[in-house]
Figure 1: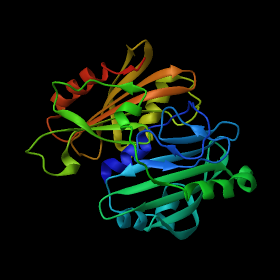
Figure 2: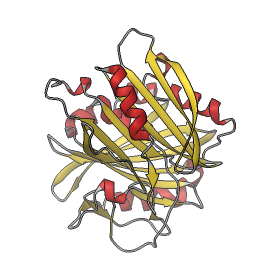
Figure 3: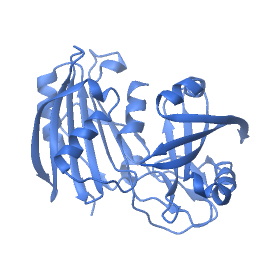
Figure 4: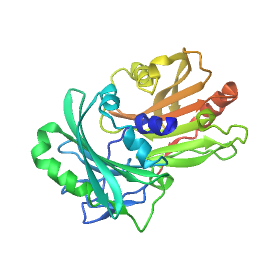
Length: 305
């Protein structure tokens, strides 16, 4: 669960492609749904987006129990993350029970509304997040709610690695692809001596959800570190300017000041003035060796042609 939460927070995306159609497979997932009018398939994350209103529908499939995830959607838990729970509704999708949570959140001085559909079973859960500015509530709320209710298992599947616009090379390393969530790719190091998931070394790679104000790139990278789960506990050990795949960026190594021994590595590459790619590596054992490996793998990052 620790890395599921981290994966959902790490990455952000923006570019779109495609045309609206009746029922569409969501690349990188096993879900199909009918998008609202004028919403198009997103190119870098799993779902749809509407540029004119700054709205999106994001699909994430999580290897976690439905009950555990929905039990975490309490008023107090959401409030701690800057969100207000407005209400919830029980629904059924193809005989599968589900819940829609209605949430309000302010980001970048804009008030957003969220309809978060969650459904699944004891091992896997699908989360579909419809997000739109509150000022478009009258025109979009009903359309997004209707769209969410069309979600169903798809007869075809494009893997998250295939759907992602980027790739890394982990051949010859202990890492292998584990999962993908909303355009982010998650790799885990195979080590039979590490049976606790919380102790396993991981790599997460993704990109930005929407256009962002970057400004000073070095400061942006340092600020991005603080936005990680428990980011306030990380203290940078080094920050280096890099150039990978014809993109400039910075890499940071850090440790936690709370005394927990963990190798932490963050690379951000700037695609343009308002978007970026991010690579994060974490390891609770063999810290020095993994820091070297994180840097080596990060340098294989490249955009697909």
